[in-house]
Image 1 (cartoon, helix red, strand yellow):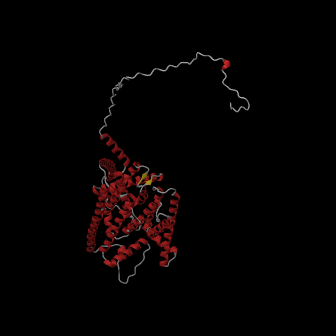
Image 2 (cartoon, helix red, strand yellow; image 1 turned 90 degrees about the vertical axis):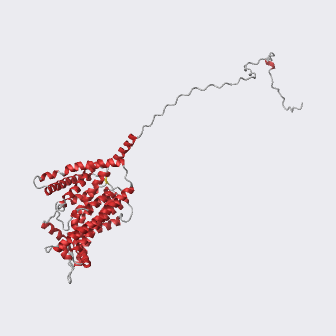
Image 3 (tube, helix red, strand yellow; image 1 turned 180 degrees about the vertical axis):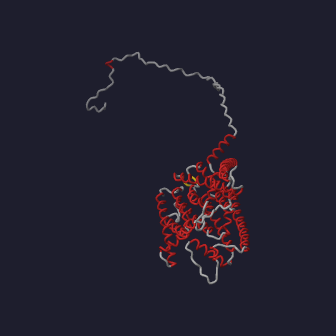
Amino acid sequence: MTYRKTWFDYVLWAVYAGICVTLLAYVGYCTYAFYIGEPLAKLGAFLPFPVLLCLYPGIRLSAQAVRKRHHLSAHTAAIAEALAVSVSFVFGLIIRLREGISMASVYGASSSFEPGEYYEMAVVKAGADSMALAHGLSDLFVRCLRVVFSFLGNSMMAAILFQIFLQMIILLYAYLVVRKAAGRFAACTALLLLAFSGTFIHKIYVIDTECLMLAVLLAGLCLVLGFVEAALCGSGVFGSLPGAAFLGIVLGFLCYLECGMAVLLLFLAGLFTGKMRVAGGRKRMAASLLLVLAGSAAGFLGSVGLDTWLNDISFYQGVTDWTAPYIQSWMNGKTRSVIGTEYLFFALLFILAAFLVFEFIRGGRELDFSLWFLPGIFLAPVFLMDGSVVGLGGAALFFWSVMAALGLKNAVFGGQAEVLREKIEEINASAAPIPAVAAPVAAAPAKKPRFIENPLPLPKKHVKREMDYDYEVAEAEMHYDVETAEGDDFDR
């Protein structure tokens, strides 16, 4: 999907460029301090920028040179895509199972191990009642984990297997969402980044709601992007006004589960910047947006009302209970760094994502990545400090992996018109010159035919002459009219 470049995109581009500079400087400083040492660590803040300025032109020019000489067929692209997807899922699952088994044995041998509050609440105990949590997504996670424990037993390995299952669902959703929105190359690149990210893999033995949150977020993103595409095409029930109302109710329920799901509303901007395939649909897009927002409010309030009815409390108390975890999280001031010690991975991630700063200038009036600016900017502070209830690190990692994949895609496959023009010029230059056609030599005049002389005498030439007579008639005799009498019957 491509989107029109608007004036607001220039504002987002400037903010995005500033965020890329900040993140690159931060990860450069941390990398230098971690691998070399604290002295002169401030110099490390400048190291990513020469790498960026060398890597981007190198990839771009190399890709153009290859594309001018070789054509990537659809069959080859399909084989490469199948290989990337297979490697991501198969080896990603193997690595996670190996890590999970290793960490489960370590936790089992350690007497001081504390699995976490979610693990303790999900443990199935005889005669114990399950207590509902105020935070919707946390309550859903505990209930799902309790179901897993009821089948596999109360063990750390069972919890890790549940986290691995959630991560494989995330990889599947991520591939489908990005392929639908940005193409196969970006989907495979983002899938590889998520499948082999050490930060993402290590989340399998942190028993919290972050993986479930990302899985639900990607499911909602599938619905939002599907609605935007259907609305722009003007076909299908889902892209109509009833579909907008349904989507709004679903988004309202998701925001009830976790307020961070509101990032999905940012993708509704594609209704106005996307390529519309039906005429006169701007008013319909505005009506769809208003209906989605109204449906979201109705879905959220309806979810709160249903919760208050089930727990037999007032509506005001239900709203207070819903806001309590968020207020407590911000009051405690507990923040955690998403980057951890994976500095090299995030340095590569941010460098590839920074390619879009240059591609925005290079691109034309339509871009395939402008819709991702808003969520990327919205979740960028999570890399430095994450104080959310459920942890938004997984969501931030996903969105910036997509930005990195789009940056690499546009650097490799961007500038189609420029490559085509250079290819045509090269073909014309290498072609043999066409020899000039020689002017035909004028033929000698043909000889006149020789006629056979006529043996017969030729006719005499006619001479015009006046006729005259020797006998002259007198004027009195020049009377040729015969007068007849009245009643003459001409009998005689």
